[in-house]
Structures are given as C-alpha cells and as structure tokens.
Image 1 (cartoon, one colour):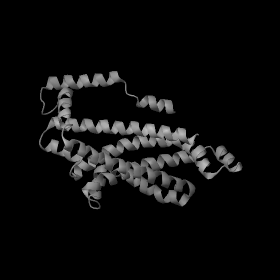
Image 2 (spheres, rainbow, N blue to C red):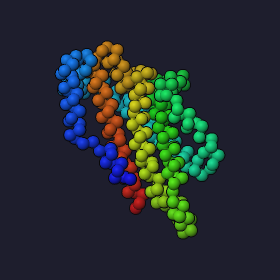
Image 3 (tube, helix red, strand yellow):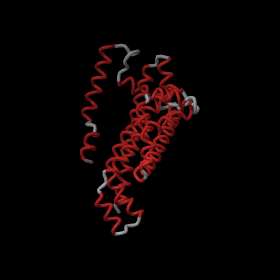
Image 4 (cartoon, rainbow, N blue to C red):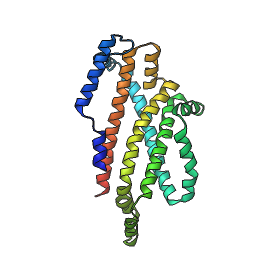
Length: 252
C-alpha cells in the first residue's frame, strides 16, 4: 500500500518540463501577457518579488495560520475518532456533523465564518473545518479495520497501554492516517488561501492574489499561484518525512 501511494504521488521531472514547454508555447502563441504570462516572465517577476520584505511576510502570515489550522484539525480529528471508536454515542453524535461539514461549499463556510471570527484568523478556522472530517473519518475507518486477533493478543499478554497504542493501534491505523493527512493538508492550503482571498486579511498571500487580480497584474497573479503550489508541496513533503520518522519511532 505504501509503495503504490508513494509511486502515485511521485512527479517525473520530464513531465514537469513537458508542461512548462506547453505553457511557454501557449504564451508565445497568444502573445497577450495580460491574459497569459510565460513561465520565464513569471520566474523573473518571482525573483523580483523575493527581494521585497512584504513577500516573505505574506508567506509567513499564511503558512503560520494554515499550518496551525491543519495541526488543530489533526488533533481534533484523531482525538474524536478515538472517542468515537470507544464510545458508540460519540460516533452517532458526530455523524451528522461530519456529513454536514463535507457537504457545505467552502465559499459558504468562509462567508459564515466571517460573522464569527476576524479575517485575520479566518484561514485557521477554515483549515480546521475542511481538514477535520477527512482526518476523523479515515482514522475511524482505520480503527474499525484493526485486526481483532492482535487486540486480543495484546489484552491476553497484558501489554501496557502506551506500548499497545504505539505498536498495535498506531501501526494498523497509520496507512489510513497517512492517506487522510496527505489529502487534508492539500485541501487546507486550497481552502485557506481561498478564505484569505474572500476575507482579504492584511499581509496575507490571499490579499496579494486579490490585489494582483484587481490591478490586472497577471505576472504577480501567476507568481503567487506558483508560490502557493510550491508551499503546499513543501508542506506535504515535510509531513511525509515526519510521518515516516514517527512510524520508525513507534516500532522501536
């Protein structure tokens, strides 16, 4: 399972080069920088933006809040999944809530959330709301699919609770948890930046995207979009390293 997942997520360098060439040719054929900026012009503008302090402040603002929201969604999803696995009433209580959250569009969430929190913390709340049901449901599925024989063996040999959680529960739930976290972190980035574009908190990546759109700065729009993609991928890679380290530590 791990091998197929990693191979599915691996991006071949030649495929990246191919689509960059398609982008470059399309920009040259259109010859309309206001509509489509070439990758070379995008990189030049990105290099210029990287020299401005506001560029890094905006990235720090958004990364901090979106990752905080993702972290809270992990804590909330895993904790409540454990409670729902142990206590059936908790599962029944949370079932309509998770179904509702999954069905509501992100834009509706953002507009409603603006009534409750300031635009500055909007991306935190939205990231939590988007990531929570994915992590909760997948963790619960993993718990439900654990091998009952291993659980019985752990009980018979009176393995301490801490070691039981680490060796028995963690190892069996990890494939489900890894998948849900990979999906959730990408959606947290998408929904978090979308929330910033709507709420326009000062000093955020979303505000920079909004300003680029309003002032028809197409090169800036492409630059910030490229940065969002790079930041999302970097966070996914860091998450994969942390999960691998946690998995190895749990088996020691």
